[in-house]
Image (cartoon, rainbow, N blue to C red):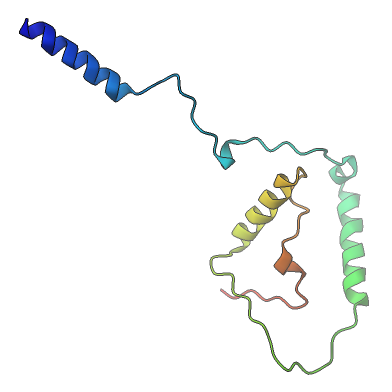
Length: 118
C-alpha cells in the first residue's frame, strides 16, 4: 500500500514539474515577423543610391546657414545611443510601419546641428 502512495506521489510531482504543455506561450514583440509591404525594385541598383546621395548633398549645400547669435541652447543627451543602437532603433521603427526600416528617420536626426561624442 505504501508503494502505491509513493508511486502516485511521484506521478503527481512529475506532472507538476513538467507544467501544462498544451498552453501556448504568449507572443513577445520580438517573436513577430516583420514583413515589409514592398521592396522597391530601384533600390536594388547602385545608381539609385548614388542619385539619392547627390540629391541629399545638393539639398544640404543649398541650405542657408543660420548666422544669428544664439541666446540659449538645448542639449539633448542620448546616453547609450551608439551608432549601432541608433540604426537598430531606426530599422525597428520603420518595420513597425510596415516598411523596410532603413529609410526611417528618428526625430532627433532632423535637428539642425547634431554631434557625436564618445
